[in-house]
Amino acid sequence: MTSLARRLRLAHRPAASRGAAVATAATAAAALIALLAAGPAHAFWDLPRLWLSDGSYALYVAPPAVAAGAASRSGADAADDSTVPGPPGTARAYPVVLALHGMADRPDWACHIWSTTAGPEFGFFVCPHGKLRAAPTIYRGVARPGFPTASAWSGAGQAKARGLEALGLLRGRFGATVAPNAAVCVGFSQGAYLSIHLALHDPTVCRAAIAAMPFFKAEWVPRPPPGVRPPPIYLVTGTRDVGYRHVLAARDRLAAFGYPVEVKVFAGLGHDWAPDFSAAVHPAFDWVAATLAP
Image (cartoon, rainbow, N blue to C red; front, side, top):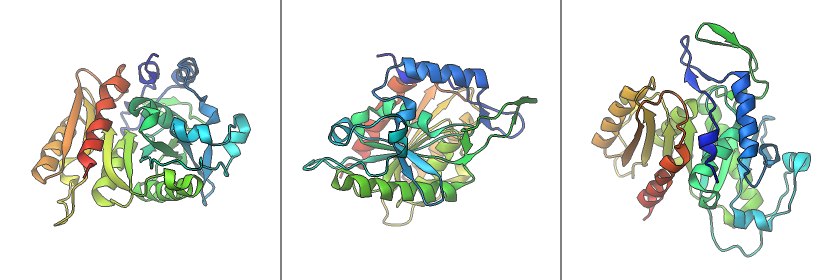
């Protein structure tokens, strides 16, 4: 099947004003049509929700073996469902991937592209919703229409709080099929920055990070506490991305401080999804799993 990432060109690019990533309405509509045509097992609006205490929600994708044992639901029922039981007698405990969307982005897009990249059998994918931003965005001096459901994060505190609550609800729903340890955090753009930040500063949330197109400076990398196993960090960047040189400098500092670190560089790519993103970045999940292994 054609890679979802190859077809999902969300046109995230740095804005001249504040470096915000945004897609035009036409591109967003085309992306959704391509998403449906890509033929995943579930349409984007069918992803079940975990309702959070502040009124927001997180979407999730369960591993096929777990989903097959849960009640089959679709449409509005799936969106409103909060009581899907896990299958009885499932021996395996699956890891959790916490996918943080970028700015002017959506959690359903994050769930689809990251579960496609890792492969749904990797584990659970939980995709919380940031702050809605429906106001027009200034992009290269031109006002673009806002997306009624597009979001951004107000900060690491919001991402941490919603991520932790969503993980708790997921464990309450699926029990022992969810691994008890912290999540592997992944993200694009703003979500990439937050994934790195949480992995470096709060291992109770993120035990590793896979960060695509982050803007993350070397001076933001802390020394790991003595006696603490530093989290693995996998960085994805493009030679034309605004954060490219910062990512390379951050890689060097991470390595100097003893963090396991790898970098995937796409030649000629700006602040965007690469056409072959899924195939090219899939090895990142194998590397993280191997690095985290006892």
